[in-house]
Length: 370
Image (tube, rainbow, N blue to C red; front, side, top):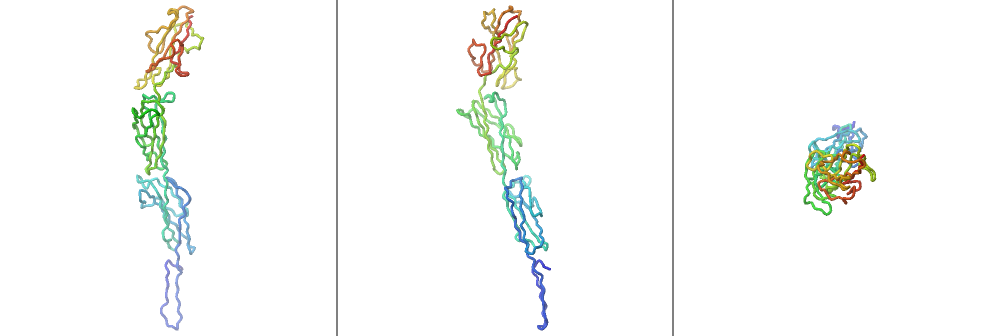
């Protein structure tokens, strides 16, 4: 039988005339081993696969013993994070060397091979595998009140960075504060500010305030624990106070040439006004929003057909009573809406006025008394 070490048993000395012999166990040769890496580009949180290439000169059965160690921060863990005995060894790469420890930067694989007589392959096979870093991502979002796709310059708006990282998780991403703000063309950063207002594991939120219109841009940068960075840009269009629009009324404004019949006391009202800041119905108390205001005029036979301002009218409605007129009288009831800018409108002789297509600041009801 072969033994692990070469052993020779020598015969004792005997007379020269006598026959002599000796017996020796054959030498058990060690197996040899190699680690074959499967083609891949492993990343933290991914998978590493290696295979054992073993040759035993004597054809003896062999046993494999794999160990995988996590390395990072210039050192490897003393204890393996995974072990196995199979021919193909697969391990799930941890994201960190230990809970709360540095990120994994490489994995060290060790392989010991022993034959059934206890001979161990020498040297022990080792393989260091560099582990990739997935890197962070940022998804910038705009939040706040917009009107016609733009933010009013008098109101702060919010920039939100939704962060993530496949191997470090959202909480592992650090977002640079403050972000870089690029002013709109022809403007400067003077009068603008960006302030951190909230930070969670998943999101970071800033409040951006500017005092000049145009398209501003904000650059956001997120960095993971290994220094991988991700940069995202978001554009923010700002506008000066925009024109208010008479949106709906009761009764509806008649088309040109048509008249509203007045045969009983009737309410004429603006139901809604659309605007970036001054709206109708009046909004709840707010430091930025307010109610639109109105001006009313009435033209009647008593005024010689001239438009006369209606005094004492408060708000968005006027009541007309046929008892105050004669059957067949033709009236014109005009309303204008104004916001805090109260800009000059078109020619006062026009029944309607539109600063923008589909956005009227003046409308007129043509009325016939019955």
